[in-house]
Length: 640
Figure: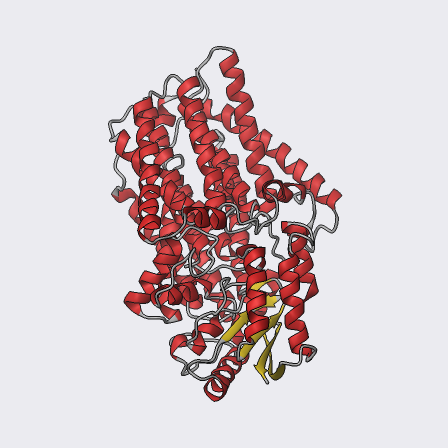
């Protein structure tokens, strides 16, 4: 009997031919309830100064500016125009974007459940989806409406549709193959038009995988014509983009120069591979692992364990005959749901409890990366062995292999932006949890089966609780900007942009003081310049950037544009400057990540000029306010 190819597995691989069936409803209610419980505590809290880059882009567009002409935009325009549309329809208010983020986040978690339910039972899929939810929100800079979350959503939808094709083919079910592949290509294109560097890597993987499947796996009868519909779906958004570029009088050379050849992340080689060189270090396991050797030993041990898990799963699958959800499975699912809701409420209600749990939190994205990669390599080795023996791999093996290396391609894309991230690796966590529960479920001896599932669920409860806890204590931290803990967000302000937002007393004081100074010193024709990532001050001052690089942050602005902006600033002396001093360490870290000091000379020159302005060396500016907010020192400079 061929491994993983029994009729029983066929039933498990896809429970129903429909997109939705009533058996999913309790699990969807569980997912929505637990996710909204977390959302209720967090969606309107805090007002970090670095939130709101694309709000400023939207304001510029609504005031007649054109991206790639009047200002630099190093990403494709899709997300920028989504935010512009929201701004136009609902007004420029932070709470509007936060509410948008709720729908985006719920959609991501729903798609995670749909993906898992193609290859796992519903109860396992629901638990895995909630693991995705907990891990994703624990990301250090999690903002639910951020462009990376839209990228995740588009990417998840595309992957779901492609995986569904494999599953349907495995089940010999009738479905609209061409339309499914067309939509998969369409959403993949939307992902690329949201984050091009990551999306292109996933595109390359998807195309290569399906071509190899067509050539090597004869039992999956996907025609080349159907594959053409995938390419057609990819082409449609790019054709619309081309029309928009032509009708907007945007130079194609400028567009390509900004979105592909900007050089903002240094060399192509460094962008693609520097993150791999950074893998064998203990940073993500701090404070438990303090050196490279410990991380390597643990990673090797985990990956070897995964190999054993894989073969255990394969062996037990032949013996297993019961795949229906048992009473024990229902009880364990209910226990996890209760723990997830109760721990979320308890953590946001008791800071001491959250502090205790977060101190035991481990950012394990690298460990999960090794686990998934090893599992995928095991599958490749097994499939190659079958092909050499002239045996056809089962569709189940193909589906798991597709899943595993899709996750690898997503994390590879994440690495191009400075390293592996929890948010982009969240689906990886869910996949590993689902595999562990699936393996336990296949153990023939009921007592061992149940004990194994209890052990996995216990670990998942700890992972969920600690992931939520770390967000209570550290809601946002990014390059030295460290938001205060959840209990400190207890103030509101009358400023229109922050209507409905609860912030810290420091944030309230800074923003209200800044607006007061704007009303006192800035006239209608006076200009404001904000450096480097604190774009919210443009919004509060109702001013537009006067430079070509609105966000003068390292990897979202070009050296040539920064130099032009510096010359403009030196010659025109904006009436007011908001200078967020990130310090030498942040500058050096970006130089290390994205190039050499020579590659970042423009950012260093701009930063040093601002230091001269702050210190009175250039003679044109004086400090009128010094703000200390979220562990950041921000200077308000006024032209003499």
